[in-house]
Length: 260
Ligand SMILES: [Zn+2]
Image (cartoon, rainbow, N blue to C red; front, side, top):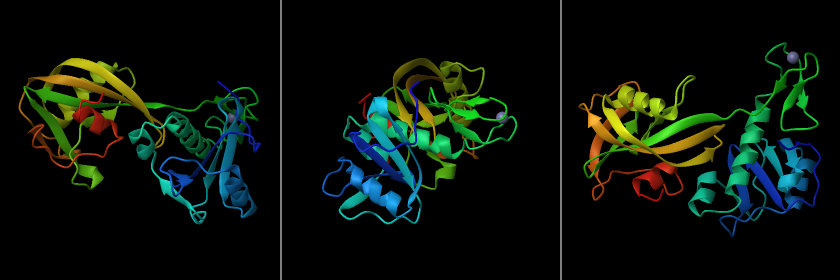
């Protein structure tokens, strides 16, 4: 993995500035990144909490304080908007935000409590007291669209406080294959058994460090029996009568509309 440094160099072609997980772009364009002088102003006004560069990927990234004002002629967007327009910079933006999130929670050593510092040779944090090396964590999660004939299973999640219906999803557990995770999540949340699990696509989702693995499967057996702590409602929907679903750019939207 490449080295991270905290030096800011004005020659990098991409400048990612985040605040509260949102990305700064020029106001008149949905995906045009700010010029480096905007970041310099943030430094001068002491609004940057953390920053780093990755020279080999030609970008610099910074996380601003929550109180930092929006620079003139700029606006904040969520990464979903980059994915929705298939922007070339989306994977690098996701990486930058995930690494900023990782740095925020990797300040002290989990073994001895000593301070962590950037490693000189790779993307890692090093404990100066005990030598423990901390690498960025990636948390795999599955999202799955289950079909039964020409209907699809969509659920409203209990904890998300939204009217949206979406695909079932959950984090992988240690010792599980992707397929076992899918079978377990669907069974736990809706009581049904699935078959013909197929891989569709994957997407980095840095909120804070997920890799979303998109799957399809077919109903095998069982009636809908909802896990009340997780699922408010789940139904079989036909595609010509869908409830409110997540926005374009989300993996769920792409699964539901057969884009992936
Ligand atoms: Zn240590």
